[in-house]
Image (cartoon, rainbow, N blue to C red):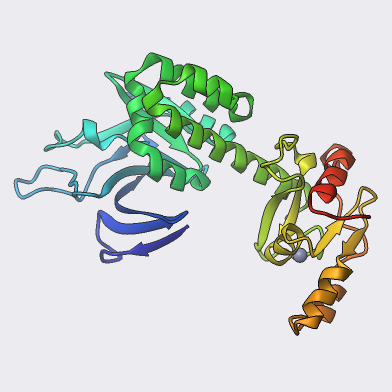
Length: 319
Ligand SMILES: [Zn+2]
């Protein structure tokens, strides 16, 4: 994902263009801190953003919208590090005196736990809470996700997802979600599953590349058996933490590891590259490869031999 700021750095809202997967969106972004409603008059569970600093000419607070531009109304709960998003379509026009938008504390806590959660405000309005990694998926699908508030059956699917995105199958989403919102719900569930997979793999490997030990936040959570393979899964034992260089080299079949965790370099490929004068840096490259990959301390998180063997077969290795 890349972001470029089109408005002034101190403007509110800020206007961004977000680029991701060859798509781009213009995004008008409002954001405030999420705090407790304050005082004994408000329920203990009620958190909110207080809308300030966006007064129109008549002095009332009012959101602007812009053609071909998505409007984000966000809250940030700094104590835990989660966002919430409100549906601007329910808050157009001049807002009342001292306006605020509310979300339940439990929704924020659920998002911290599972990546994403919903807060049904009734009247078809749905507020969402989510972890920072979900922001791109939220931007892409926000209109459809907020719109789920108008459909009890779609709300049910979202409730299952907030409970545990790894327990909701794509078949179930196809069966239960409405046709108009199926794609957005499916995309969101996939993103949440990827986030969980990544978090588990990173923790298991101590945020180090299993091949060279580097950290520096250059890591990917790679699937051992590629996602497109029918036997692939999102278990930690089908994942490995690899730096960008070794992830690329692994996917290209230049390096691998076997079920005894020994690393291998593809000597045929190296010879081919040498012949073409494309082997500069190979000695350094070879030196950085550990003879055995780094292993997660918990045995059940280590690469599953069945996946390792099948992955090597798929990638054309004869070990
Ligand atoms: Zn590496």
